Amino acid sequence: MDFSEVVRERRAVKKYHPRHAISDAELKAIFELVALAPSSFNLQHARFVVVREPARKAELRKAAFDQEQVETASAAIVVVGKLTAHRDAPRLYADAPPEVRQRMLLMIESFYAADQRLRRDEAVRSAALAAMTLMYAACDAGYATGPMIGFDPLAVGRLIDLDDEHIPVMLVVIGKQSGDLRPRPYRLPVTEVVKLESFAGPGLT
Image (cartoon, rainbow, N blue to C red; front, side, top):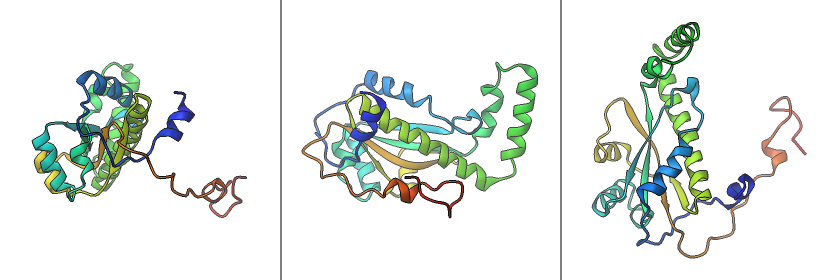
């Protein structure tokens, strides 16, 4: 599948074949692509918890307001953002030339250290970019996915043993689609969502 096919093929799926299992090897192939997703300063804020065990999926379903796809999909993936990713910079820049490393570490520290809101915003932004990459990579591998924001973050955090340095950003279920999809919902035209030079400028036609 070329990229334009992946984008057109990907849909938010809610109905899955409950008996289909996704293997570690399949997950690894997908996540090796996800690891290439962009992040601010290459801090790689995104983490993922893959839930496949039936009992744990049942508990996660409760925390997701009883949405059945959490349990019927092959796996439910909790997309997590790391709030303290800036502290990983020394390791991430360990192989950079010394002058580059020093400059980047100072920049990252000054940018993030005193701004708790920015750290949270960036954890969510970078995790969301990784989640989109996950959905495209899964589609290319023949899997359907569905992003979910309907869940109790505290309950999900307790279930997957999250610490205070991480927050659940969204769930992404993955599996084999069951049944036909409805037609794709209406999309706003490009001319309405893309403006040239200014938000008040002309639409792209």
